Image (cartoon, rainbow, N blue to C red; front, side, top):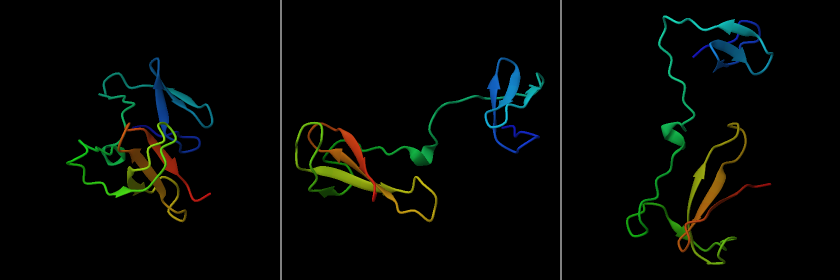
Length: 104
């Protein structure tokens, strides 16, 4: 991982260069170093629901906007800054549609 010398933001690898998405600063990548570029989610962001009978997620009454079913599994996750409330995520027990509910 590389950080911008100008503004401190994380830099992205593009065509043999490190490019800052914030200020546009560029510098060449070191060809001798090993880098791994990935777009995958961090492990802490992935929620595996498993099959319906073995899911550890609790079930509640919630109206699915996709199929209209009135039961969903739910979990909460902090996706904004720590001083903001958590976001509730729902997964329909009928069609597996996933949606979120903010406090806004």
